[in-house]
Length: 305
Ligand SMILES: [Zn+2]
Image 1 (spheres, rainbow, N blue to C red):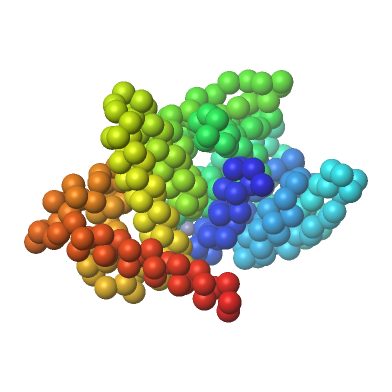
Image 2 (cartoon, rainbow, N blue to C red; image 1 turned 180 degrees about the vertical axis):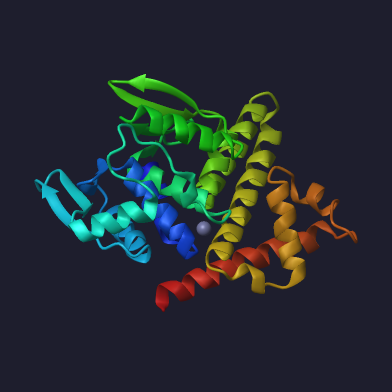
C-alpha cells in the first residue's frame, strides 16, 4: 500500500466529528469530485473505502447517494453518486449552490465549527490528493481542473497557516506543499497525525544519520541506539494514543511520554536531566520500558481478542 493510501486510510478511520463537520466533508467530496452541478455529484476513486466514506458523510448530512462499481477487474473504479433529482435538489440547497454556477467557488457558509475546515480539506485530499513517500521526497498535492476552486482552496489553506503554491500540469491545477513541517502540520490538520509522526521520526533519523557521518564510529553506534530506542518509545506512545489508552496511564508515565515526544533526539541520560524533580537514568528507562510494555500487551490483547 502506498503512503498516500495509508494517509487516506487513517483519515477515514478518524471520521469527521460533529454533524456540521459531516456536511463540510460531504461538501469537500462534492467540490473535488468529477462533477457537481444540476445533474448532482459524481466522484470516482480507486479505493472503495473512499466511496463508502463519501456515502456515509452525505448520509449524515441527510443526502442519499449510491456506490457503483466500474472499470475492469485490473483497473477498478468506484463511483459515488447523488443523481436522484429530489436528493440533488436537497443537496444543492444544503450547500447553498444553484448547480448552474459558471465556475465553482467555495461557499464558506458550509463551515460552522472550528473543525469543519479540517473535514473539508480531508475530503478534498481523499478525492484528489496525493503524498509522495517521505523516504523519497516531501510533496503533498491536490489536483483539480477547476481553476477558481483551487484559488479559493489556496486562500482557505493560507487562512489556516499554510503556504501552498500552485502550478499547472497537463491542463490541471496543482496545489502543493514541499516543506516537511507544512506537510506534517497539514496531515495533522486532516486527522492523519500518525502519518505526520512517521515523517517526524524519519526526519530525526535522517538528521542523526547526517550528523553521524561527521563523527566517530563509536559515537555513531550510540546515536543509532538512541534513535532506535527513541523511535520505539514514540511508536508505543502513538499506539497507546490511537487506541485511547494513553489518558488512563499513571501521571509519571504520561510525563515521561511527553518528555520523549518533545525531545525525540536526546539520550535517556540527557532526558533524565530534564525531569523535575530529578530522576535517575534507570528510573526514566524503567518508565519508557513500561510504556513500551503497555503498548505491547495492548497489541497482544487486540490480536487475541
Ligand atoms: Zn464542524
